[in-house]
Picture 1 (cartoon, rainbow, N blue to C red):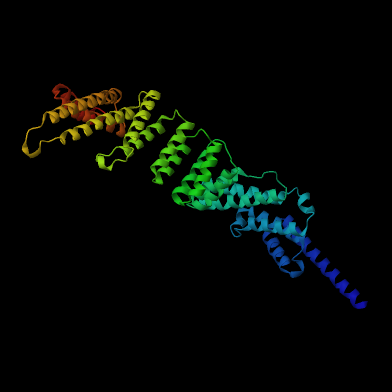
Picture 2: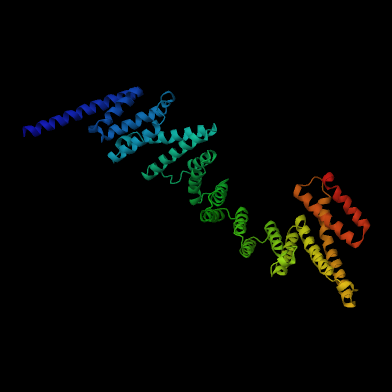
Length: 425
């Protein structure tokens, strides 16, 4: 009994000493003697007997929180704010009632959160993006912890997440940026400018990471949140084109146009790709369904100019379709040659005459389209580089047609226009 009593008395004495030591540390904290308080609290908690003293950990959190906010002291203790946060978490595990924190109205944890946010904002505004990223990332960790403890009703701290991502991106930490942007996209955030996050993620995963599944995921999310943005359709087509499967690409074009039939730029591109697939200068290299593809290209180009009558590029391709059909006929005509140096037979002469008529008909059909390009672009002043290209192509083909026809007056007109494109436009 005496031994047991002695042990109890010793334990009580230790508790009293510990309490007295902690009171002195608190006094130093109150008096803003932070270096002394820091040294004392670290020594206090280093003692195994005090390792589970909840009030000690809470005091440490307050001391380090004060140091983090003191510019002269924070420089020598750069991790003071995170140390304060870790001490608070330890305090919470030891005291589930958290009376001290409630009495202080959760000020220590709010100081950590607001301190990280302000430091991140200051770094960001000064273009110090790497430290800004570290501060915003830590701020988010604090925010998520507060939400997990039901001290906050903010499940998704969108501003902090956004600036974590932007700061990471500007620090060339693309994978980290993707992680934070992904948090926003997964939550289907919307609002002014947020569409760029989805686009960035699509491009990052498709072009940088070669992760098609993730790219398709964020493309689908972006399309869901911003259905009117034309980026999604264009990117879907790029992805289908990269696969190299033309039938699948054309199916994707049909799908896109079915949902947006007035999208004349997509329809124009569809027509051009149909024509490029269907027409090859070497007839032997053309696919079996060449005529069908070319007819479909022609049909879609006419829909383009019906929707947008000033679409010069569409008129050019329509003219090229007619012109190249004339070239095909001309090549067939050249194949009719007399055998062994003999004269052409009456049937061969008749066939050649038929070809010449058909060639003239095709060239005549091409002329109005090329003239429309001249009308739309030739009457303007300064043109874009691609527009000058359209105009030169139209003039070049008109020159060939009128040379073939023997019309020297028209030939001269378009030669002069062709030679003056760069000067005039």
